[in-house]
Image 1: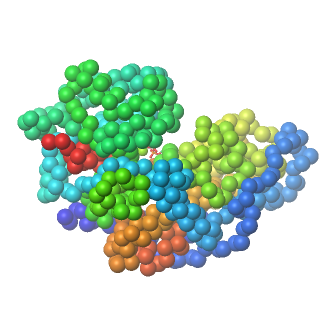
Image 2: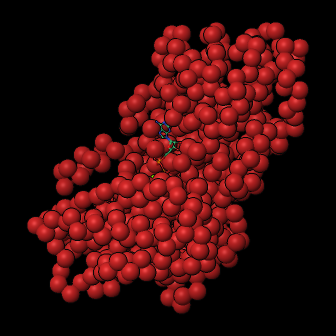
Image 3: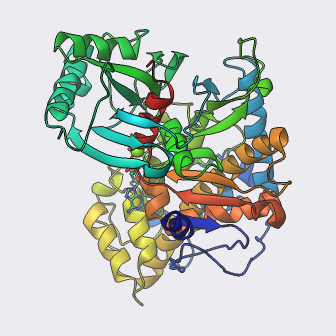
Length: 524
Ligand code: ADP
Ligand code: MG
């Protein structure tokens, strides 16, 4: 118990005081900075599409400004990206409206509001041996968890990460699931009988985290809606994902059973809830983004079941939100070149896959229209995704007087020569603009979820602590992003309600969560 409460203090961010940040701020996790009220600049232009056209790139010197301090591209971009509090209030309201529309009827709003069939969350009493299988990116992970009940909790756990050969990501479903089943079989074969014990008469049960859009049909079945993240496996459309895995396991004589099919947001929520019963929301901020939360069944008109009492987890698929966002010409051009044009615009503004690319696109135009970066436009600067979100983070971390690190990040990744300090300062400002917009918009989404929960439960106004579990490297590793996001919670919820909210970084608990949901939904 002691360990738990100290862990809680270490990981948690309390929101009693907010703060606005530029760069290089304190890395203390519990912040006690002054609450700076946001500068509310009336920005009519920020909601409309920028009409600026990129043209005449090659005719450079002639159109360049000869004053290095003047950079109209950046100035306009900053104005278009502004997210003053009243505007974020509108964004939060619009997300909440789409949540309600999606709860009323499938396809009612931008957010899919998928029913997960997770109607019971881990209680802490779970016992026995369970497994988690996580497929959602370039790696898949297997984990075994020996649960010892309320007192002993996680008695033993073992995990293994296996990278998926690219050819399997674009091959057939038999090949992909055959590979997974084979690796799973060898993982189980290595199990030490002293540490892990399967009770007699039980099969090994799996919580399967499958982080692609799925139309869930029960807790242990669902059909793939579409592949994302570079996967394109044939023979899967409309097929039950669990059946594919079961067939592969059977073919290899592996006697295991999938008892829960979940996504990583649900896994994060469940895993975090195991340690802390005030967890109500799970958010992923990594390559992509998603959020899941605990909803009251009576607030879900589209739920068919007669007994509309109790709770269930809703997978919002909030990345799909695409209304009233501060879209700039750069966002529009990136979207046009993406695999899913016109879709997931919120995800494209707030998640790790895209922030670096937006900066690159603005930089390219800054380079083409000013003298800040010399006379040439390097080829690398024109290469999509040459600048990654990790690089923005490095740029904003630069503490040196002459911003040396900024210079080397630009040169190493884009072959861009930012020889004068003014140019490097502008790049820092640009990164901050994109990260600020992303973090603040993500904050508005979290507020929409918290207010939806508040509407049905009144838990915060009655003084009940409410925890948002966060996972993903963007949240974990980008302090400025994190702080911008947290500021918005205080701005929109107000100090009083925000003081009951805690944001908790819960790294890699989704595997534990999936195993726990296999336990909760065990057929034995
Ligand atoms: P996934 O979402 O695929 O499970 P992660 O949670 O590991 O993956 O997040 C990966 C993403 O996080 C990367 O795409 C990148 O955008 C971002 N990221 C990784 N490292 C950093 C970092 N040091 N600073 C900022 N962002 C990072
Ligand atoms: Mg992840």
